[in-house]
Amino acid sequence: MNDKNLIYDTNEHPKKWHEWLLYAVQMLMAVFVATILISNICGTPIDAGVLGACLGTLIYQLITKFKSPIFISNSGATVSAVIGALALGNTPNYFAVFIGGLVICAIYAIFAFVIKWRGIDAINKFFPPYIVGPITIVIGLNLAGFIPTYTGGSNVGLLVAIATMIVIALTSHYFKGFLKTIPFLIGLLFGFVVCLVLEATGAAAFGIIDGFKGIKGLFRLPDFTFLHWSVEGFNFKTLLDILLLFIPVAICALCEHYSDHAVMSNIIGHDLTKDPGLHRTLLGDGVATAIGTIFGGQPNTSYGESTAMVGFSRVASVKIVSLAAVMMGLLAFIAPVQVFISVIPSCVFGGCAMILYG
Image 1 (cartoon, one colour):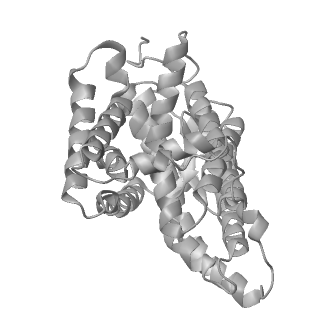
Image 2 (cartoon, one colour):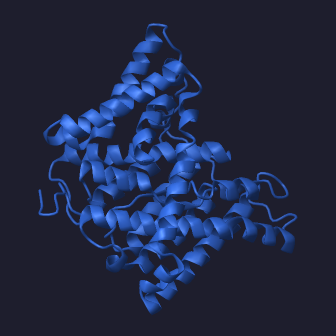
């Protein structure tokens, strides 16, 4: 334990292998929820989006010099823009989404240059806290609105989600030692076991058992969206439509980025907007967004879920975040693990989302 009340600070890492594994899995599960949900909502390949999040996070870490314990993954703020771009011309138009990703990257790069040149006060003039705060709240509320989709309109699913949420809260508050630091992992395991028992006894059907029967082979290549790019019919009007779709959401996502890093700075007791600097975090996020649209058809963004996880677990190790990113990338290729993750009922993830989207 250090003087910041963190179990592991940003530049620290566990000494025991099981801590490495469990902390990384917990972070992975926390961000995996929204990653697959947003891909599902937009209709883009989940496995490719997962790999895009992995690469985006690692690139972000490289650009920020491994000083920021934030995970980068599919952006909830850009859902409407992605859906609109996919519908342009020959659908699904993944090339239009990629251009949109470049637009976001360019806007982030411009703001990064201004901040590097004029200092952090430059962005405060554009986006003071009383603007950034409400925008971030609206994004969170918008994501929270998808929580009912986790339960599938089922009373059983809703009860499992609530039970999972309660277990997470009780674990975080009452457990001691190492177990206190992995509340989401314990909650996920609890919810999964409950669903497995309910299905085995015939009380509910979640598709867990049939899902395991669907394992075929060990490895499977993701459905990369760049393989489906087409410039047929791409013209100035299409470009204008893309700009109108992505510029507004880029500003919203930029505010979310600023807010996430401000909150994380408070949690870890170190101002990330100064070191590594907001110009670096913005540039890292922007490049990660372009990478995400290349592989998974999804712009990336800093994840409030990872910020919440650090706040709950008090594990701010950047190496843990990076390991979680590598694990996420492996999920895009390992078929049995993909199946296991896919058979975890969505209502279990819903219990996590009830807390994380706060």
